[in-house]
Length: 232
Image (cartoon, rainbow, N blue to C red):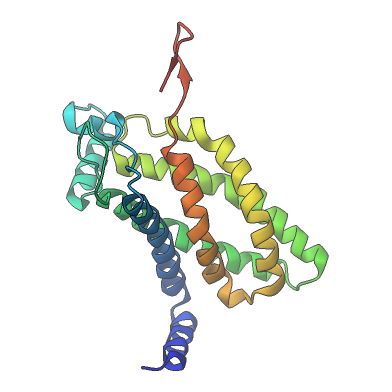
């Protein structure tokens, strides 16, 4: 099959089933970026981050919260929970890849599809004022809740007891980093890219962003207990 025929089929799919197409494209690039990051770590002998004890907490103790018990059973069925191990991971972290695939295909992909469809309909044109308006609305209206949803959904799929803890600890740094990365990327997106390819362009850009996001997510959380002693 020639490249032109493949491109034509992709174009037809994007036109006939835009929601499905955009969701699968975004999820594929999102998961592919995490897979590439793990492959890079294996090739250059960088051990993957060790599994957090909090990630397997629901597997070792009985939890009395019905919602967390239900989500834990759901996560076990889909194989989303990390296995308890005191050693650092040296193989691919397949549960983590599944979590990124679910987030990309079923959460972020559909949200971005609907968001850009509305944004392009509400702010029409490529005049500089329109582009800058869309840029600000995208970064400061959509991005904060999307970051919150990312951390909370990941915590749910990881089976953590406190699904808000990581979000509270890492939200600000993640948002500041996203501003440095996405503002120039989205400026080009709104200025040059056709509306039908908006999510596809973001998917390609997300391939790089996920590596940054994975680094931020894997960074240890620093809290202070009642004695003001630092702990990780």
